[in-house]
Image (cartoon, rainbow, N blue to C red):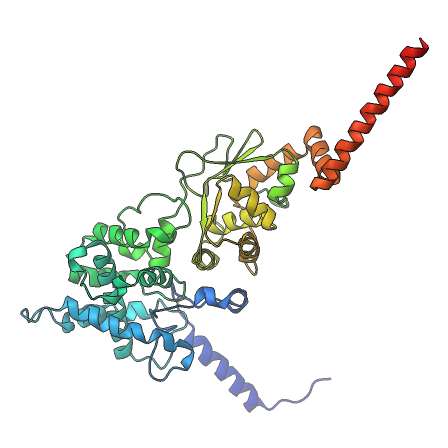
Length: 441
């Protein structure tokens, strides 16, 4: 039974839908700077929030904001001070206007980079923000490498913790400027088209943030091929092309084939798997399994490591589409072999984990939560072949037998004592039996 509907209501609904369709017509804007989606953020919100400085619009400090970002206010004064240092009072051409004009020319392009730009942010405010934030970043990395530029009373370089916090905050997924804006400002401050120098300054500033060995500095490329600083850091940590010599082949998982994850370091050790630190420097992600030995690069875990890895994972969730998710895959591998503090202790003893947190339990908890609310490994999972090799090794009869023996009878010192006592009693019984037989004979 159909209910009568007023034609005017149908027309109004149709007009409203058509109006909305016109608003979204055309190509999808190519956004490069997003907010972290809710279910990923909720696992650890602080990992995505700045500690000392707001860059870009998402955490921007202004007088109308609530008190949640009051701690970011102090850096607004430093931004102005760094901009002032770039101006020359004796050169009328070197004033604020040239920076504002340069950024103004790319304002519309920069605006399109943000997926969630506040509607209340006017073009003038947006340009002001880009100039202050961008000039601060460029001047900061220049000062970091150029001691002649550093003032004696610059509090940023007087307090050791400040640089560490800035390194962390400037790589956050939400705390970004379009990379081409930084390059436009660098061209005005230094010299046009000298981006290889800028790459070097950025690479040097962020080098301490990496928790493990990566590749060398990224080659000079078109600035518009780099989305923002977090993308720059991701590209500078890329592993070399995965070799196909029986080590870690970057093979596609067969359609319909389910990936079988490997066990913890404790369980693998029971099955005669040994862990060894790579002696020669190589990328952190090049994990090898050769003749029952898992060979890994050292991984440094400190206060900033969780935030660094989480933000790189967030980046891969938005942009890499399972084709180059090497950080996400590595974290999944860590989550497999680290289940408890005992696993962390095993890897620490072998020099594979350098635990600067001190508490093995905290390291295990951190690693176990890194993969929460993250899309699972795709068909290009980096360690798929290595996992198969590990399962093949653990499935061998002698290794299964040793694993069962250790799990059932050698799981604690008291269990080992009882096994030894049992063996001694068995030997004594056999010896007594032999003596009895010999006496009868």
